[in-house]
Amino acid sequence: MIRVDRGPKPEALEAIRKAEVKRLAAIVRRGRPQATDFGNEYNVVRSALWRAQRRKCCYCERRIDRAYNDVEHFRPKTRAYRGQDRPTHGYWWLAWTWENLLFACPLCNRRYKRSKFPLARDSRILPARHNPPGPERALLIDPAGEEDPIDHIQFVPFRQVGKKKRWIPVARGGSRRGKKTIRVLKLDRPALVTYYGDHVSGLVSHHVKVIREAIRAGDGCAAAKAWRTALRKLFHPRQAFKALSYDVLDHHFPLMIRQQLCLDLYRP
Ligand SMILES: [Zn+2]
Image 1 (cartoon, rainbow, N blue to C red):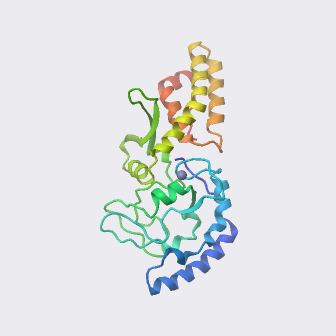
Image 2 (image 1 turned 135 degrees about the vertical axis):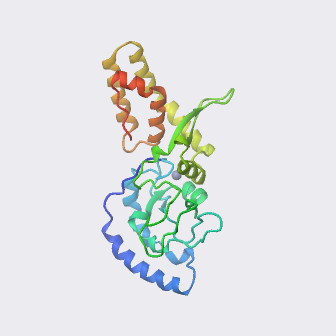
Image 3 (image 1 turned 30 degrees about the vertical axis):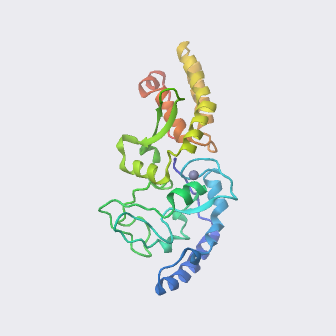
């Protein structure tokens, strides 16, 4: 997962938000809203989000198609499962709020995250009609939030006897939120681990090899050039799995080596 910059709010959204929040408020006065009460007017931002996220899922960083994927509500609109014995009402008033909308693949959205929105044990709950985060301390990392998901999630190599080396996401430095986010979104699901492996063997390993050969040959100039090429390709805005590429480079060329050779590993 990497940071997402949504860019400016699409103009059409504000009028829709005002009308829809008013409509939902009337439903909420009568009882709990159902999923079907929300309609699909929020889909007006589908293309804007897809472009802003460079055609990738906000959670798993896979490249996705615009047509078959979902506008995702970071704070779930109908029900929100916040943890044991917590109220489960959804954040209905945020269903058309730009800052709550993301674009996700159906596996991340519908199969894994669904209505889960775990909060820290001592967190209060955001009061209705308030803007987030307020007093709420979410455990899920918001890819469009203030913090960098890379601070919480790290890809590490993992090898089982007789099997190919794999890369799996773990909580960086034991980050509780990293751990929870990986678990809720199942970012270590077998299909994704296969994609991670293919990305490393099919693309990242080539750059690692070129850089390493230049270093072995004692050619600092060639190493710096290969490094710049690697970052330009692996961190291209449309490239998938940039957080993974970041950790693979960090693994093969640790900070001490990078400092010796003046190679800068910036955040993608
Ligand atoms: Zn996804």
